[in-house]
Image (cartoon, rainbow, N blue to C red; front, top):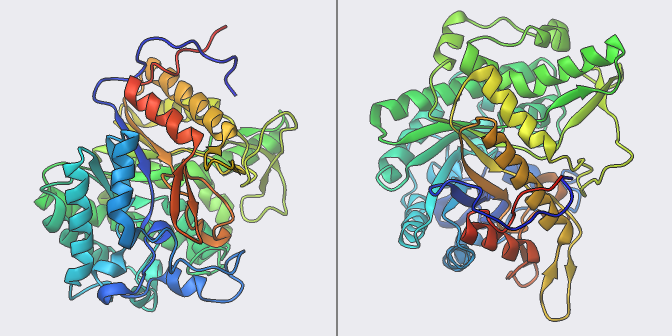
Length: 458
């Protein structure tokens, strides 16, 4: 962590800096089949025995579909100036394409209207992992037609909301969809194939490009892409460890950004996937390489890598750092890595506007008898990462906003409700929301535009 404790001082962030929190549809909404919605691949995945650690589904989650008014009021109370959420594709288009479900679309209209009335800017993500099950049945991200299906869905959302939504993201963390959903099978749709993963990754990027083109034709504001990044370093100077770190960086960080900004995949990926690595048409890569208005970066941890032939397919594994704090996700707390990541993006890809679209941690939270929730580890995590973000800005990064992950304790995918990332505690039995100490700290950060954080000494 960045130590010692800071001195309160002047505001650290620009006046128009976006202070937000983030969620995703399947993790908070619940009511996945309500009012004409179709099932998603995550609905199907969680209803398959053995897929979720706790045996839970997202059928209720945070019940945000019915409690959204209270949640918007809570955001306003905390002083948020922005809220990043995703749309459930199958809620709007039950079969993924074709007929629109008016009630599903109206839910997002009402939510956006309420946010605007509260002075909270909506940041809308079109795809945050939950694919309509009907499209999954047609091959999902392995079917080249999905680029067109995604563009059709995007156009529906642009027509409905672009007059009130000024920031759009096409995809959230496509690497996780490919790695967890198609390579290792730990996430929906649950496939495990080295031959499928590169195809899924490529079609995710093609879909991003198709939605980008659709927005350029009809949209009036800004659209970008959200990726999760981890700085990768070698655990030693051994050439095998150095090569392992380079492969890990190519696989996680450069696989999606190089095509968007440079028009080519990293050469290292052919080594990672071997015979499973396909050739891709130059015309595809030319379409993928389109200007985006901003890049969203989700940052949680770093990877100190060593060569490990058993760690398929990258032959690289993380080395635990004995003096570091780790979250309940077994992720090292390494705030310096956020600064490193932001500076690396600027150095490699240029001065693209950046939002930190997710940053947060799962820690065990204590619930006091008076209902207050103490989470000092999370508060320290946020403070140190905000200081790192400020340091990156001092280094020339065009950082325009920060979104804590997450607004609410939610359904954490294949971990169910066992991992709590929220700055607001959710009692899943009663759905009662209780702001944690970290929420009160974050509210002060927003109120003072970072002055409450101060600057690190020494």
